[in-house]
Image 1 (cartoon, rainbow, N blue to C red):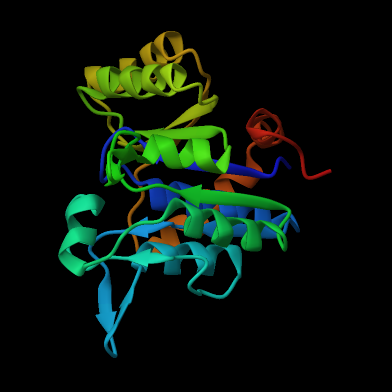
Image 2: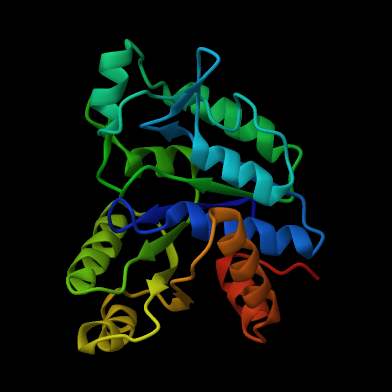
Length: 240
């Protein structure tokens, strides 16, 4: 596998965490040492006086690694834009700290999966965006898109912005595809694949159940798909 992959979304709530966790689980089932990271999380849970990233916990579970400060270096209280949540918490998001955490995790992993916050243009600190963090970590991008009306515009804009910032987009996964798609959903994947300049690497079902149950099912479906080896090569390597 390549050193790593950064997972971003076309919007908040598109299921980046589920996709990242499912890929981590699928790779782990193939015997790959997977490192996972959620550098910045807004809207964290408080337990015993400590803020915990629920997203990062799911990623750690999926990858079979322990949750620690390297995996989730910035846990913020309010479920708002990270730059504002950090200001409320009196926290300065430092890219050098994030990079140090990333490299420590990467040193003990075959592949790293890093999940962003919201989309590429989400501000983090002092005019710096998620896209700037992707460039700092020197990672290619996987875009997670929703299937509904409006997703073509959001997906094309995301891939266009990445290209303007010289970020390589490996592909797009359309997530939470409904069992009974309407006209907008049926046509969206083809249009996204045609216009984004990056391949559609999966159309993942909208599944019921807990987050862990959904991750398990998606990982199993991914590994059972004959195209999964091709998808992994597109993402940067194979597990052979």
